[in-house]
Amino acid sequence: MGRWEPNARGRLEQAALDLYSERGFEQTTAAQIAERAGLTERTFFRHYADKREVLFGASHALEELFVNALAATPDTAAPIDAVASALEAVAALFLERYDFSRQRQAVIKASAELYERELIKLASLSAALAATLRLRGVRDPAASLTAEAGIAVFKIGFQRWVASGGERALADFFRESLDELKAVTAGG
Amino acid sequence: MGRWEPNARGRLEQAALDLYSERGFEQTTAAQIAERAGLTERTFFRHYADKREVLFGASHALEELFVNALAATPDTAAPIDAVASALEAVAALFLERYDFSRQRQAVIKASAELYERELIKLASLSAALAATLRLRGVRDPAASLTAEAGIAVFKIGFQRWVASGGERALADFFRESLDELKAVTAGG
Image 1 (cartoon, each protein chain N blue to C red):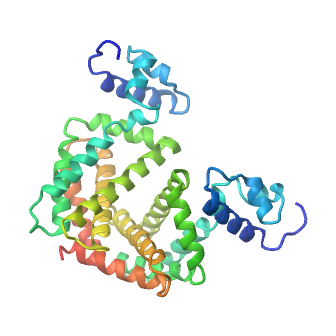
Image 2 (cartoon, rainbow over the protein chains, first blue to last red):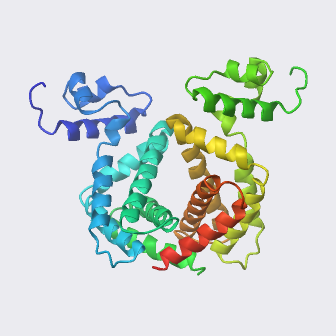
Image 3 (tube, rainbow over the protein chains, first blue to last red):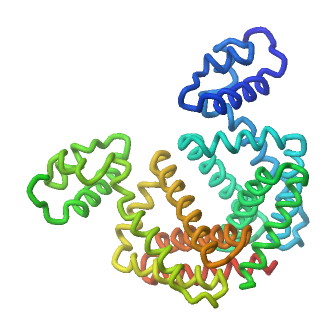
């Protein structure tokens, strides 16, 4: 390992996001990201496998938090309420991340390759939630459908939050989206 | 255009599926698919842009049918009931396609590249359904969440159908999955 670079991952992430916003994902190289961050290309590849992965560094932490929060809710909670409480925990991850999240979302929507990666991460998250619900004794198809409902609320709530201006917390958008999902599936 | 080849698309599709099952998607070329189908490589590329697309030739027709069926339901139907009736129409597309669908699903799950393409198609389908609901006067987030609910039912119902042995119709699995989604979001 080379010398210690303070907050190398965060600096690479922000540099990548800025370059993808300015010139597009396709037109940016790992070397340029490293240079913008004041680091070497070698340091880039010590932290990220490729220039796609640099925007998904937090995905593993997100999945872990989501799954652990779901597993930690009392067994007596209905599956959908357990998912709602896990969404509250997940929202806390984004408290100081509004500008970053909005910029990241715009970059991902502009690149088919990044958008594909985002969809894969969400599908993996859904599978992890369903597996956790099964461990709580929820059967299929209830486990899979509750997980899909949670991911739908996550996706739409997140989209609305990044489009909102950032005055209100992500947790509000998750709650609203879940209430709306309940209303529409009830036929309201 | 060359001479007319009877059912070239269907033959290429089945040949691709067989080769992907036998030796894997990565290890198969367009030339091999054409050869197995008794056609030329040139014919392959007249019908499909690449060897990934050959398994998604019906996606456009599926999206069109789904959207048209949704648009055709009476305006008085609740959005989720309109989606349920569109799902019935979609299920009819698969009446004689059980073996093909099961084989296709296995091949897609085995290749990251094909799985990404499948997820993109589902996301595009969800966006098209939400747009159709907005045209019916459904507001957001209800339109987006109803569309996501429809896609969740489509995904899970389809997965359960291909795993089932094929005795029962896809429409049954769609109905059961929607009922279960309603039950879980109601907190049952």
